[in-house]
Amino acid sequence: MSNYRIYKQQVFETTLKLVDNDLIRLSSGNISMRLPDGNIAITPSGILYDRMEPEDIIIMDLNGNKVEGHYKPSSEKALHYEIYKARSDINAVVHTHSRYAIAFSTVEMELPVICLELLFVGAPIPVAPYQCPGTVEVGTVAAAFFKKRPELKGLLLKDHGLVAIGGNLNDVYQNAYNLETGAEVYHLALQTGKVPNALTEEQIADIFAQYKKP
Ligand SMILES: [Zn+2]
Image 1 (tube, rainbow, N blue to C red):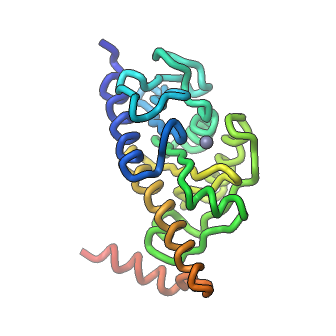
Image 2: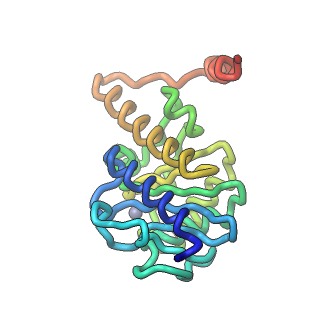
């Protein structure tokens, strides 16, 4: 039995959580984690997630070469490995084609820090310039943002969706969820015809002080 079985199971379970929360559908979106041996466990390409089994998760190396698995690794594999190469502190990556993220990415609207969900993912959330999906450039452009802004936990990819990063699968799941929820809230607020104010520096400092209290 594969030494990777437990990691495949963890990526599989995170994928199902994202499906349950409607962040990923059909075979869109992909999830990965960096393993202790330096390889990456990643969702397969083109498999409907409601049909996927834990053993369908692929193991690849840091250059995207398959190490183990029946299918091809995700077509967005470069988005994952370029981020891991750029950030040694990041061990999990989620990419979704979730609706509100795609919507704001199409009009290149940055998400301001209007609520806790967006504060916790390092808003203002930028929109990375358009790159053809599946190319290495999608990864290098996103990785450059994360390298430049270490506090950023996610960003929008123009005309495409979102990518979230984290220290582990649980973190990255929450970051993807918060980013999509924040985008949805911003959309709903704009429907009133008013533009919501961003939290001030002082309000943000107070929030972090409050969270640090025992
Ligand atoms: Zn994609």
